[in-house]
Image (cartoon, rainbow, N blue to C red):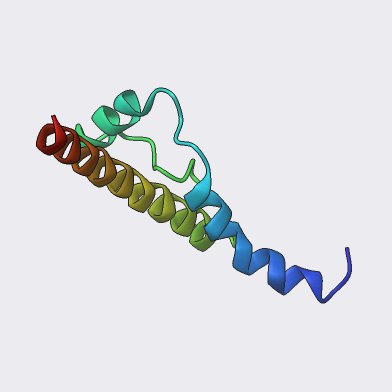
Amino acid sequence: MRPHILPLAACLLPLLAACSKPAADTTHATMTARTGSVAPADGGLGGTPLGPLLRDEQRARNVQNIVNRQAAKQRAQIAAQTH
């Protein structure tokens, strides 16, 4: 890989993670996180150099989930007002 592409790739990684589709089974992961599971959310890599990137990726997923929920609520409101 060319050296000038690495910074660009590092900037795009969180954006790509935010745009990706959420996993099909997010309810299990959410329930596990809420019940105080023993396993860390980053797969145990929090102390490695990948830790901050993994936290950013998870944060981007969380933001995308919130945006998706808000969009669904807005679509429901619009549908209720137009029908």
